[in-house]
Image (cartoon, rainbow, N blue to C red; front, top):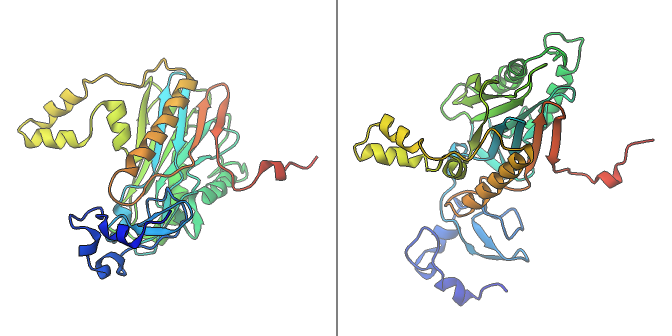
Length: 346
């Protein structure tokens, strides 16, 4: 049931010490506060608390929209490498920006995980900026797939019998950054950030690799290798990484700053913290690696639920596994259409 007006006035607002009755409504409902666009009781990116019938109760997150808000670290994408393969996982929250890099809107059904060519065991994930040239990154990834699979375009073609993961990563950089991003944004501190994690097997390889491309302030870093074939196992993530950092490494990244502020050198602080027991083991079966990635996605989603500010991680979660023998395989994937209503023609 919606709260009564009297109950409204007695509830304190997050971020304020005074009860609601002591705050001017211009402060609470002024033009700087975002209005609800989702009738969802779980919605946290909106500055309103909503009951299950979509009835507004009271403003809940009292913080002005940041400009540019793209400085907020959105998303969680995870690549987990073990001996039997690599598992990729991504959430579905994304943002759009205007040409100046200012926040425009947030959406919760973005496709961030994709197989760039159906003939090769390589997957990629995107984080940060959700659109370029008027299209989503997932849509543009399918355009890039056409180039990778077109043998007539030798400057783009990825030969399944003779390719490297680095070649795929460099193609992603050429397409998304050199061709699209630089035409939309200048090299400027306020230009929106975005990036990619690319993981899989090169032709004939027995161990997967993980590569990263990072676009920050309009400049591109990489592609750089995160885990080469010689590294047995490990995990890399981008976006809201606090929960992953705490679980997988055993500490918050903020601890290093606090230890150095207390007089410890950065080297000593890092060595001390990195001596903790690691969760990811190279001998972990691929199914357990899938379960761990799923848990990390869910954990991050629940973690950011209680962190003040905009919601930056959202279900549904997409997960894929890449192995030497099975190639790229979807584990769970959202669809905007029903497969039962779209059966292939006989």
